[in-house]
Image (cartoon, rainbow, N blue to C red; front, side, top):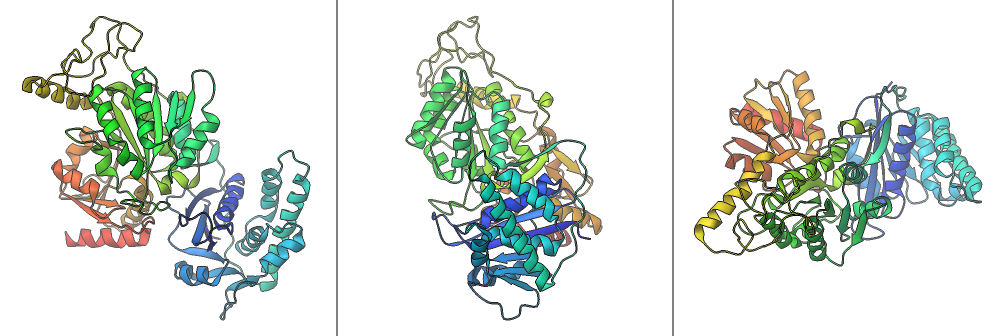
Length: 563
C-alpha cells in the first residue's frame, strides 16, 4: 500500500481543474486523510494553461509533491507539458473527446463531456475523472459519495438532482477505470486523530488569526493574490465596533489605516507587492508618528505587474524598508497554513507593543493552498493592546528613549501626529540633536520585539539550512532526507525575520555556512543576514513555482560537499 497519492488536474482556465483538485482533497480530508493543495493558473479570467494538484496522505504533509501518481488531462497541451512530472508507473486519465494518446498502456481515456450529459449533470465531467482516479488508486468511493451529498446539500429544490447527477458521474468514472483494468497501489487507510482537524486555506487562517488577535478594522483595495482575504473579512469581520471597508486605492487604504490606528483601533489590510509599493509613504508616516497597524503582503512575482497569480518571495527587502529614509519595519513570514493563523496574532501584538507598522509577509502559495491543520487552541491565544496614556505625561507623546504610553484622541494627554521630525511634544523641529534623539528612539523600540521563537535541530553542525516563508516545507523535506542519509547539516527556522530572535542570530553567526532557500533572484534574506554578520548563501529559484524537494536536496548536498 502507498502512504501518498499525488493527483494533478491539468487543462485550461475555466475547465474546473483547480476545483477538481480541491474537491478531491476536501473529500479526503473529510475521511480523515492529511491533504495539501497547490494550483497555478494564468492571470486572465478564462483560458490559458492551468492546473490544480492534491496530495493525499496517511502521514503529515510538507509539500504538494514533486512527482505525480496520476495526471488528469483535459487537452493535448496539458498532457505534453505535465507528463514529465508523472512518476514511472503512474497513470494518465484523459478526455478522449479532446485528444488521443498513442501509447495508452498506462492511460484511461474517458469521453467525459458526453458521459456527464448522460449522468444528468453536464458540469460533472471532472467528477467522472475523480471517479476513475478513486477506483485506480483504491480511494473509498463511498466516502466520495458521502462528501458529494454533504457538499451539494444547500437547502435548494435542485439539490437532489445535482447530488444524484454527481454521484452518477462518479460511478461512471469508476466503471471506466474498471474496464481499463489499470491500478496503482491502494492508499493506506486514513489515520486517527487525537485533536480535531480542519481543512482551511492560508488566507482564511490569516483572517481568523487576525480576528482572534482582536482586529477591529480592515480596509483594503482588491489586488491579486490578496483580494480573497479582503472578501473573507467583508463576509466575516462583523458585529459591534467592527468595520471592513474597500478603499478606492492602496494610497487611500494606508491613509485610512493610519487614521484608524491613530484613533486607537487595531487595524489591518491585505495587499500584494505593487500595493505595498504605493503604501510606502503612508508606512513612513506610521513609522514616524508611531501608529500601530498591520499590512499583509501576499507576495507574487514582480516587478511591475510581473506574475500576478504566481508565487515568489521577493518583497522581503521592501517589507523591511518600504519608505524612504531610515526605517526598519518588523516582518513576520509564516511558512505553513497553521503558522498563518498564529502569525496574524503575533503581527497585531507586535504592532500594538512597539506602536508602529508591522508587515505580515505571506505569499501566493501559502495564501491560496488548502491544508488540514489541527484546530487552533484558542486558550493559547495571547492578545496584547497598546499601553494607553492616562495623562501623566501630559502632552509629551514622544518622551523617553523607547515606547511611551499612547494618547488616544479624546482621552487624557495631547496627541500631535506629526510626519515631520518632531520633538518629544510632537512639534516640528529641524535641530540635529533632536533628529538624532528621535531616530535612536524609533529604532530602539524594536528591542521590545525580542520574543520571536525559532526551530533548531542538529545545531552542532557547521553548515545549516535556514529557509523562510513558504520554502519551509520543501526545505524541511529535503533536510529530513539528507539526515536519513547521514549528511551532517543543521536546521534552523523562524517566521520572525525582522528583528530576528537574538539567540538565533547569535547562533547563526557561529556557523561556517548558512544556506537560505528562497524564491527570488537576489537572495534577499541571505543578503540581510550577511549585513548582520552571518556567512549566508542563498539557494534561489524564481519560476513562479515552489521548490521541488529533489532539486533542493541535490543543491544542499552539493553545497555541503563543497564546503
